[in-house]
Image 1 (tube, helix red, strand yellow):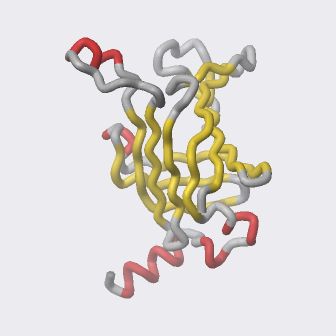
Image 2: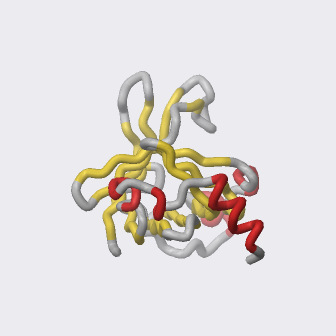
Image 3: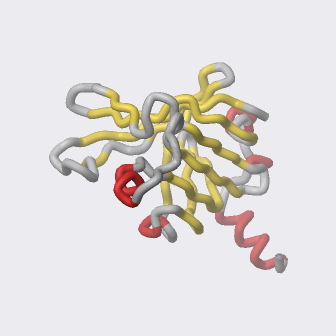
Length: 158
């Protein structure tokens, strides 16, 4: 990498070397425990990827991250009709920055092409060895009259 690019990145984002120990605690590999959609009006929570989702979140000290989430306990679809009904996958990567309790990824690769070039922000908090992430409130992609957010819980692996 040329030095001007490295200097620009260091100046434009906060890397864990510059962070408090609380924020540096994000560095490592995390295993997904739960992934829910929470409805703002009622507080009701629905599992987005079923009761046993699978996922991994890797946050590197270098300022890069990647994550992948899919439904757990599923069998490989055998037909096109089964493939269409499959809950799919969410995966993305990019550089990140941290400001207060906000973890923001500048997406460079994603399973959802609409995310490439966007910034995805999550509020984070720790509970022991667990990490809680939540998106901002927004309209449901299935029913725009319903406001919800994604809430996930992760357990530290390394």
